[in-house]
Length: 137
Image (cartoon, rainbow, N blue to C red; front, top):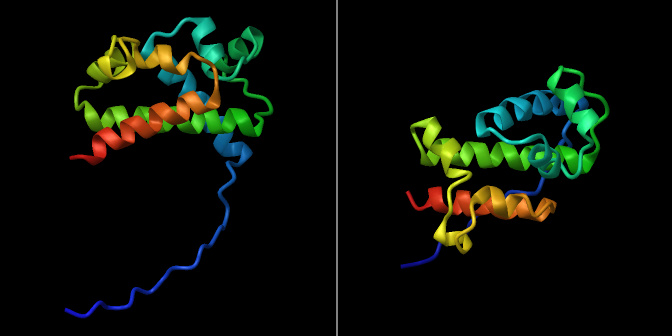
């Protein structure tokens, strides 16, 4: 059997940056997601990188101001986590409950406990873990 050459696809970075309009939509969706997850104000602010309680209150009123790059990435990871849960659990309420349930994969901690460590990388790790879990299907 002869190996066939594989055509490579050149890397083309068009626009990977999250726009301000997209960030506003992410913020509104994040508010809805955190309501579904039944998070406390403190938990919400921690997941959003130490967002102030006042800013979080404005977001819940629909008033989203400037969103920096770190916050955009946090929200993008949260949406990836949500997407992963939607793929794993056809019943959305089971996915919302899973977030707070103790899990042996995380040493008895819940996914929320892992994410609440506060680092952007904690959200990335959870997203990667969920992506790996659903890719086995």
